[in-house]
Length: 314
Image (cartoon, rainbow, N blue to C red; front, side):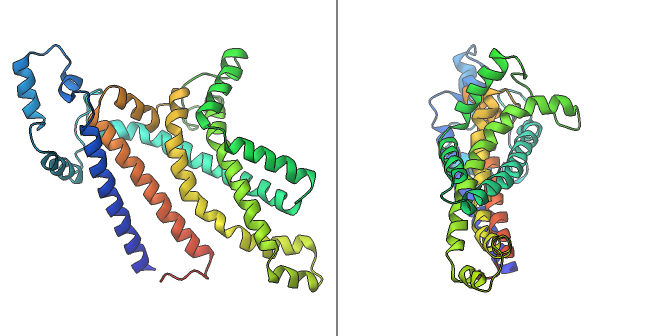
């Protein structure tokens, strides 16, 4: 187990290095000028040249990447062009919101999705299966930001039932938190519920066709006992592999949802940094997102190994 974990950590670090280099390369190829983004367009040509060299923009890109990577390893992500404060402090104020939304959305979507998937599998061919499968296929194809815009219009602009923007942690003001988080959480969880429901249905139906289920039925076991002890126990194991992918989807999709509802998270910060050419923030946001997704996949692999002893570490 230790060797496997070290191997996966090594793979994760390699992915982070590759992502960091590609991000640094693409960000520095943007057409907008970093000097003007940081100091404004009112500076003279002489000041521009001085600042251009101060930012090491006259150096080769590999040299600049080396300097940036060395500073990052020391904990220095640079100074934000927009906020004029250390990038680490800016990210620290935003990342907690995105992590909170991602974790809560996952905790909502997986239990509900698995429950609905079990119902569709057990009631295969009946009206419950038809209705739930149709709704799952429909909602799974809806982008989160489209659902967010529709809900914003219906419940905020049209009915004025819920606030249009903002975010408050539950330990600060719980009633306000509930009113602010209903729509964003619905948008982030809807696709997850549909996806998990479809995957659970497929896994359960595959498990139902196995020989051990027919053997259990031939022994006279009740159908509820067979489903609980045999079908669910084996059919739900593949669902664990969806956790990492779902977290990755939420982290990416939250960018649009946070922007629609003006939630001060990583998604909103990323869009603002792109619009203002805040290069240090852009690089840090991509790196933190890649790190969170990599850790989510690592945890998923470990959970899969813990739940299914038939998997060999080799």
